[in-house]
Image 1 (cartoon, one colour):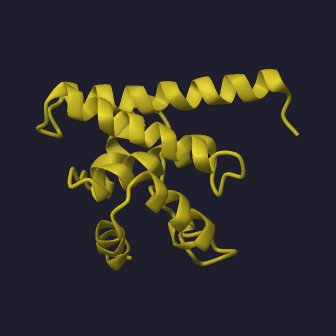
Image 2 (cartoon, rainbow, N blue to C red; image 1 turned 180 degrees about the vertical axis):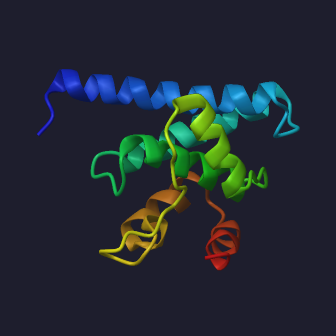
Amino acid sequence: MPTQEQWIWKIAEGRDRISQFFHYVEEEQLIDRPPEVIEELKRLTWRLWQAVMDNPPRTLLSLSMDCCYIVCKMTGNRISVRKMREIALFLFEKPIRILATPKRTKKKWPLEERYVEIILHIIDDSEAYEDMISEW
């Protein structure tokens, strides 16, 4: 079990990665929205990441990028999975698979009931959720 210091570091790292992602998106104008909308997307992503990081279904870096994708997609600010992978590789110098399907469960984590509830609590739009998962 991680120490309190390790948790503080992990939380700070997650916030930093999410901020880096949205800073890049804003600088490159990948989402054509005013800065306050980008800030709201960042805030929603941070809330989602915090809500699922206690028992993370993936590594925290992969999870942060999954959360960025989910929030962007469900709020109508879609960035393709391919572009997300490119951004993650550029920013973090690691190849990341966005919303990978684990061999063990054969189910993407946002499809698990406990995560569905969390996602819909943060972004209260079941139609957007259904639209997102329909592509899987």
